[in-house]
Length: 228
Image 1 (cartoon, helix red, strand yellow):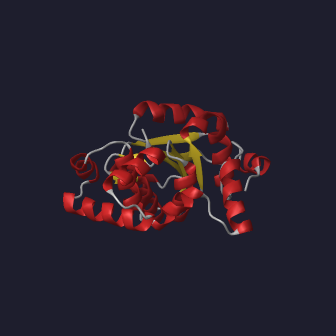
Image 2: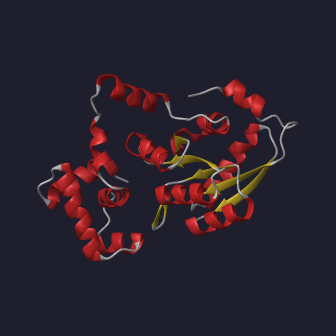
């Protein structure tokens, strides 16, 4: 999955025009940090920034970025939905997810949405440059731990505990995560832009799919996996 030397050769400043880059995160200071880290690539870059999905799509329509760094938490919009939109309107843009959310739950989901790699924010400082080189070289980037989980799953045909969440839709998983962060139904409704009755439907689906009997157990399970 990794070939850093080949990636370095493929991105020589002499051999390429400046790369268009898209940074999508709703915190300006985080985008500044990403831009500084990308400076370590040692190649000319044109940095475009967006703090939500609408701005990100506008950038993709305007300049077709070579690659995009995308957070999964963008207010009321799912980052997974944005990845699909970016890939649909700009197929040449390769996407790297940089997120605080547990890669064991979200990494494979992000890859299925069209991303080429997943880096947890706490590891970004040491991993992001190599990850970008790898995905620009046409390969997939995952941490060693995540690669081991994926390979073990195929090797022994047993799923890790977090794989039980694979039965949840992206929206159900997001509602489950927000419950774990302690948000009330009204807060979730406002953040995701959906009705209270829709949230109740998602809650019922989550309990059914995960074998959860009560609302109290739902909150406990969500808190254990997604506490803020």
